Image 1 (cartoon, rainbow, N blue to C red):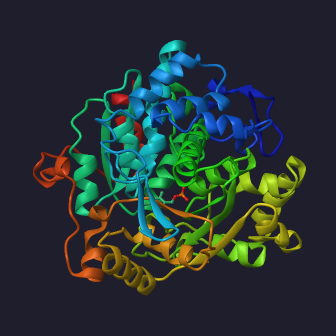
Image 2 (cartoon, protein in one colour):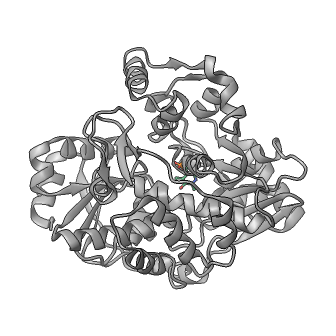
Amino acid sequence: MKYQSTRGGMAPLPFCDILLEGLAPDGGLTLPVALPALTPEMLESWRTLDYAELAARVLALFIDDIAPDTLQRLTRAAYAPDVFPRIAPVKPLAPGLSLLGLSEGPTLAFKDMAMQFLGQVFETVLAQRGQTLNILGATSGDTGSAAEYALRGKQGIAVFMLSPQGRMSAFQRAQMYSLQDANIHNIAIRGVFDECQDIVKALSGDLTFKSTYRLGAVNSINWARIAAQVVYYVWGWLRATKNAGDLVSFAVPSGNFGNILAGHIARQMGLPVRRLVLATNENNVLEEFFRTGVYRPRPASQTFATSSPSMDISRASNFERFLFDLVGRDPVRVKALMQELQQKGSFDLSALKPQFEDRYGFVAGSSTHADRLHTIRSVHQETGVLIDPHTADAVKVAREHLESGVPMLVLETALPAKFADTIVQAVGVDPEVPAPLRDLAQRPQRVTLMDCDARLVADYLRQHAL
Ligand SMILES: *Cc1c(COP(=O)(O)O)cnc(C)c1O
């Protein structure tokens, strides 16, 4: 299994060589040269596997330079009961409509599903190569905490996570800043998220600094995260069907297009998926693309702050991988479109629009704050189940695309406890906080406060990098 770039400028490399890199050297994203197949026989033989065993089988299709028994050890550790007390449960909401619970991990959001595997595989590959890695990132909430919980205490890795001071929820702050592991460094910047991101870009863009301090990233373009996400589409399909060939639809709250891209990959590999229902909030760049065929990302100044904040994204970092398939896996066309995007701020693929649904199964819809409140309330009234605002965006759009005879699984991307304000606004009661996190607010916090200046962050890295 070798990997190539969406823009064609990279000699094919094995998995372990792309694992620790971000973008491909030509600015593209990495993808398998040929996707492995999921055959009906394989799927049927996997029905009785537990999650960790299934993950080892699916990931082995993408990773042939790590021994299968090592891979099994990594997935056993990543998906152990002390990390995920329950793993990817299917929770029925109505006939033909269920949640796939992806938020049962340490940070109560779906990013744990992929990040826990990433932590395991990073540690193993770094040890094999005798290397160390300093992860430098910026977070407005979910990604940073999922990365820290996955990498805490890992050998050969340190994490430097910038967050905008005073701009995360108290719950999110407590989650990150209460970690006491020596390899986790929380840096609160006197600034906004975009300024944190600019510091990361400045330091990672300084190639001498980057190689001297062995800087790495764990953002959503990392292929290992996408591969680990393919697993739960297979798992969900196995839980929702009885026979080979039965179809399932998935509805996905989307921001960077990472989660639903894994669904697209699973479908391209042969998983019997009917529809991939993409849901956005008011930041509807992706919904607009699937409705019109025109892709027009927006600047930060035109991105709304909504009550499903993890989807407040107007430039979807993983979209280029889907684009690659859409234009017939032609890197020359991808490169031309990305150039056009840079020059004109948009590109128009409306000529391919019939394929979005007919060939790739994609449909899309968007949701507003009022829709979220209504959906949280109606699901709670009808079923007693509380859902988080992101999941509510997907339930709203999923309901518009239900088909009889085709089960719809809505990916639950966070638990309501993370977004108590919106839940209280919707139903008037506080969401339940899982037992292990009830004392979170009381735990001592460890964070370094810094002015918004890349040089200060660079100095800190010089002192503390591995
Ligand atoms: C990250 C995130 C999303 C968006 O997922 P993408 O892979 O970026 O599309 C949706 N909901 C929650 C709760 C998230 O944390």
